[in-house]
Image 1 (cartoon, rainbow, N blue to C red):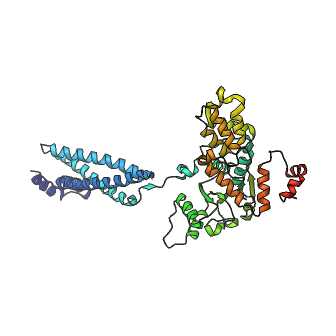
Image 2 (cartoon, one colour; image 1 turned 120 degrees about the horizontal axis):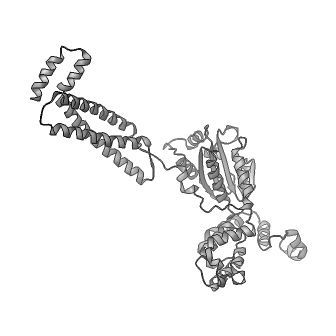
Image 3 (cartoon, rainbow, N blue to C red; image 1 turned 180 degrees about the horizontal axis):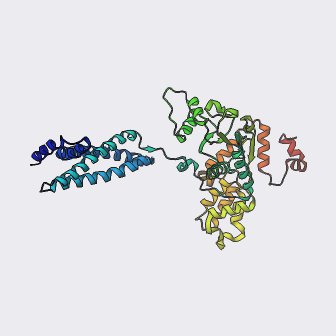
Length: 429
């Protein structure tokens, strides 16, 4: 019956104008429009499953799904439901009504056009449905241990001002191992991002044995940059960093002069929007790398050290049996104002409720090498030992050892004046 009615409509439609004839063709193509819709919806379902698999894989890799992909998935779900409802209505229809057939055929034709557009759109993103994890979510830049100490505020503000200064390209921060340089520069980066002084922020630890390829790989990974297998790595990295974007590259823990341009980091007048923030233990490393501004990070004051110690150790420091003879304060003082040592020791003692345990800790800390805390402090003390090993000549090393035995307000000259023979014996005079 549908075929007979369709032929009749076709004969009538031949005598009509083109616009009117198109409307009559919906009746003539009633069956084929629904057949096409079923076929195209089947293709769209397959495409939806393909995209879904890609999205799940990207989410499992902690990547951010593109907004276009999420919108596509939502709209595709909607049109599939609508199309299946329309097909079901056609299947359940028991009577032949020209007006109903016309409307449904027209809807089916429009749905086929929409499905075709969705299938075409899928091809524009199917090879990459997501973005890599954003740098803000990067674990390297997390700074949960940052404490706002009064003695560090001026340094923090100074570095931030240097980051904002368009004339400054390379900035340096220096201080002994464990003093808090890394924590401070991470906070600089975070605050600079919040104040919209930067478009991008990357952080790489260099260490005492710099590996050029590893540094480049770290930078490229955080900048979402892909190196070609046989490509020129430094040139590509250089081009990525030398843009109009404001990019801060933090190179942490530098022991010796690095050739930034050889790495692919632009500097000087040809750096574009790129700035470099360095941390080092030796002040002399910074000017050797053309740092025009550098800031020292010093020991915590006694009050700041105690505040940090209490926060890390918890309520245990207020227990009467532990608090007797000011034992927690004595342990804190033996940490010598080094944040990394204070944090490590305080956390180790957090659940120690016996006075004998605290007295043992104090005794161990007073020893030249605290064996009881070897596991906890191995990394921290090895860094300080590395600082010692890098000193040139026995005379500097002897001076370092003597200084480590001096109280904070003692000068070398006053110590030698008090013990001239010892000074001559140690090669200081």
